[in-house]
Image (tube, rainbow, N blue to C red; front, top):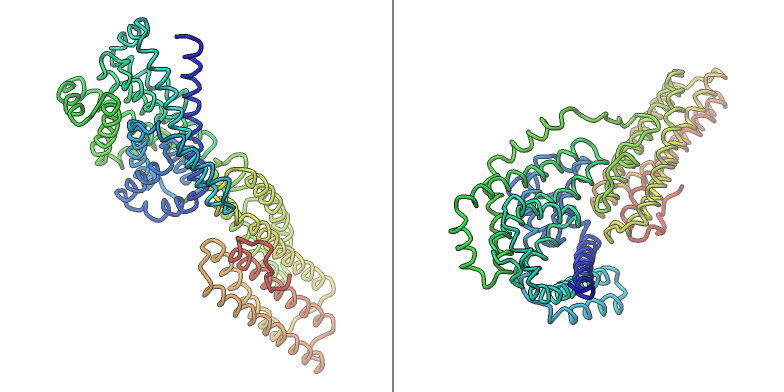
Length: 553
């Protein structure tokens, strides 16, 4: 081959990979949040999981991307291994759609597809439409890359030396090894199969049946991406990647054995439904994957259990009260753009639970004057401050990555949410300060005052609990109406208790010092309710994080 031909072949491969990557990234940006919801909602049943895996991978055009996302879901606790197994099985069928597209000669239309994508990206301001343009551009670039590779291969087939080299690939084991090595190198089985299809199209293989064994090697090589992605994750994430590997190893062994005994009828059958050698390879890829899923489906749970045998034990768990440690985000946790915001919100939920518990601990300390409770309030407040700084930094970092558009729009609101949760923690610390003052000055509360504080705290706890639930589920306007009503009740309660406090002072039923502490505490609780409302309001208006909340801070 001349230098120009090599350049065209390598350049075509580069465009093919670029097109696939742009298509995958574009789909994840446009529909990543919705695809994530699809994975969460419909994977409880293994058959639905397989269907979702087929659809997801067919859209993203990458089984590696799908499996990497599933690994991240398992790492985040959004999906268990049995649910993940169904999706992984389905993704292996979905990945064959790329090969079917490549086998259809769309090279003549590639420039028009590219032009349509560029126009969509340039002339529309809506970010979702622009990202759809990116997907179309990727599709066009992919087929331009295929056309370039085809042009280089047309010249290659004229070379007796090259044809001789390809004719020497007749050992099935060696063919499997070639498929594995190339796919592991470029980390895309779709790309390898795409190249194989074009090579078969140009009749570079004197014996096209050898492509069947190369496909089997590609299947195992496709596991490398997910295995690499899982290295930074927990053991459950590693087991998810291992399910993908075991499926392809067992599937390859089954198909390899069957081909050894029934090559002629299998190859003949596939040829009979294929218009040319390129379609033969694409159809073989699809048939093999479907056959592997059917053959291994009864053993799905056994494969999951096998991963526990290969990787025994559990990770050290970070409790929600562990000081100065991150549970869902950070350097030691697997990162995936599609689950990055979900992971951040789970860490925010943990921070909110700490702040809520600390508020109750501080209120208990105010009444009991327990020194251990007071000390723990201060220690937990330091942990809340650490989480606030860490989560804020994390949100800044992920804002620079390729997040789904829906997630990107909501990041601004999460900065405000983190700040409001931190302020709830500050109010707990303030109440602990009042407990210290009460103890030092020997101030006592009447039984009526203690009951009133407990009643108001109960109302505020309901506000916080509902706000956290709304943050995680975004339950809609009706839920927000309930929160506004609750916040109004807290405001009314605060005014009512302030009046009761004045009445007790007038009747000399409490001391001025006790009255001041009581007034400060109920004012602080009322502001905590405001912060709880703010959390929900920012989530409701996440597309416009600067929207006025209407609540005090």
